Length: 221
Image (tube, rainbow, N blue to C red; front, side, top):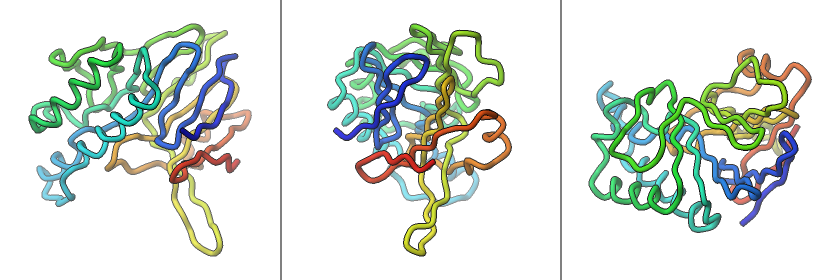
């Protein structure tokens, strides 16, 4: 499994091409913005999207759990696209999700799309989670407590690149000494450009950008 190592708050982190993060010392897998059932949600607005986004996202999660064998998995919020998404899961997708959560100690962080816990799912529902000096949240905070580093999601960061005359948009990680923002792991997730003021304001002292390739993570800034 290809991985790119960084240090955040004196902790070793592996950035994975899927957009997930693995913390080897705690055996923790971190994913963000899964947005289960976004496709079926679009139907209520008359938008026709190909079915299967949840199944595709679950397939990626299954592979991550197989590759990393995490003791704990943290989902950084917006795991479900809306309040009724849980009820729209097919019986097969529900069973697959249940099997995933039963293989690890699951921590669900509430997001703006799923602000209320789904108690039928295995795992712990919290607004934020702490491990060592790492603070896990859905929405990045302007005020990170002294001595801590923050891992968050929410913005679905993307970078625009020009390669050999072609313009490409890629999901990416954004990192500084005290902050890491993950890309969305869901199949039908858009993104916010990394130069948007809401993102740039979170990195007043500069940042590193790591773009997702097909099977590798590339530092591009």
